[in-house]
Length: 417
Image 1: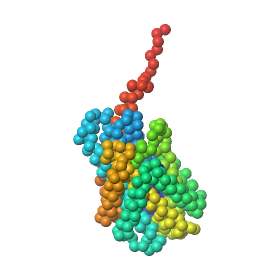
Image 2: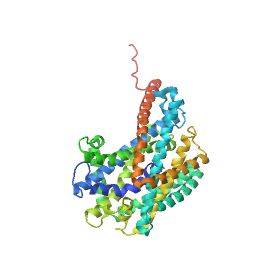
Image 3: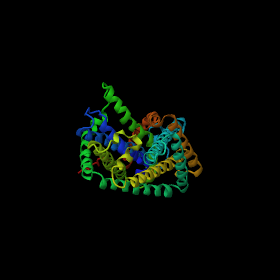
């Protein structure tokens, strides 16, 4: 459930497209595109965008919410976590403003991601069956999926989302194993292992790179790294609340391991399999994956391996189920956030949010496609990034206070001889 809600559609949408894009266009390292070193750099930056940074952003919000909700009985609202810093102001206007900002970030984050899902399903239908790619097709896709996720939302968190999450992981596992077996297996595994090493080795430099004097590199960073960080921050209220909701009973150590490391490694393997296969096809001159539209890249890779039609259909089904899971989870979380943190928001409020998410995603698609989706995400993320920093400070303050109350960390006084 954690993985399905956290990154599902994004992994399928960018799993092939991002590595091949970095391979064909110089990254901030200045390495020539299309070279052996470009292969390594393309995967390293992909890992950087989808690895520890992403899940750390989710984890901060989730951990703070879980601590104050389950440890101190506070409502499941973002504002309720800032009591140690703001005091009673969280119950007044300031608290309401904080919760409104959180709701806006969640709505934009989820609606934008649903837009990505509609675009890729449309891309698959266009690539495989010649169905026109455009807003009208995307409109029907969004409407159909909206009906399906409302049915899922009606059944509740314990049934609908859980069942769909299990279906997601089964389909994703089938596609991943198929690519590992049918694709360049040894190359994929070598790329996975090597990239983890270079990723960890270069993590500090990549994290602080802003290129103040190089306009071209700064533009690349803004278009990729900043966009992704904005995406994770915009999704943080949604995914954070959801992760906190399903992580009750875990220790902080178990929570950090489960949220930070496990999903990152799974994502790394996914990108190595799909992105690595695309790069190998391009590098060896077998196929021009880079010439395909972003939403068609995955299907272009499948076309070069056995069972291509079956894999493509499974991929579209997977995108659809990830779509439904994200929307279902989003309506649940928005229902919580707008009913004073209730852990069981009513179906009426969830349906209302579901219709609004579908409508906003369609407006964004109609107004400018992928570029409109990306720009809206960045704008929505900025205010909540400030709130995230305050949440982290609030947690530190609360933990220090609790440690003092429990006598943790104190050096016992020696008894006189």
